[in-house]
Amino acid sequence: MNRHTWRGFLLVILVVQAAGGLLSACTTAPEVLPAILGPPVVPVMARHGLRRPTYKPWEEFTMEYNMVAPEKTNWPEKLALLPKYENGDINWVKAFSGGMIKPKPGLDEKAEDLDTEDNVVERIPKDSPEDKAIFPHLEHTQVLACPNCHPAIFRKKAGAAVIDMKAIKKGEFCGRCHGPVAFDAKNCGSCHPDS
Image (cartoon, rainbow, N blue to C red):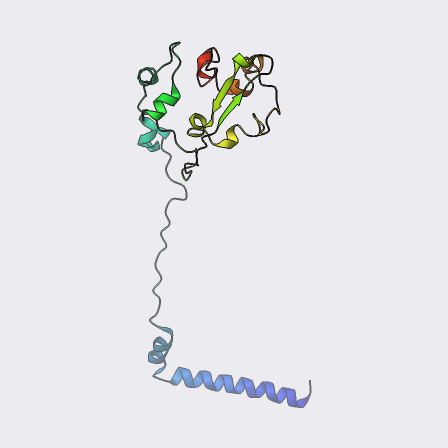
């Protein structure tokens, strides 16, 4: 180090010592510091809670609604009130039009009713016109949205599929619902008005 650097160091050390001496001799220092830094902090013993809650058996914290069984619905009693066909199957269309049931528009809470379609489809077999079948859309679209059937079960093109009673009784086409849910396919007069 050269001479000028040493001089700088010594000058800094002298200034710091002089300032320290002045501050220690100054009588107003204790009043000035709290005004700048705020009141002195008094140390307090830290109190920590338990790191993990005390173990309680599951019975103590199980919520009340888990302990109460839901009210049971007597479905046979309710279904007995609905109108029936002669063979005992429930007539869902009559129950709906009579205001006895009101299906939800969908499983989603925000689902809205869709427009219904009042289109009647007639299927007349060429070899046996007396076996004419009618399909009224309105009774179906009041309860089901169009994508339930189109295009997976029925394509919207006339003659796109051969729909016969063998296929229906096997659970295809109309047999997807008629039998498992709606009236059985044995209830001929509902679809074949001439029988």
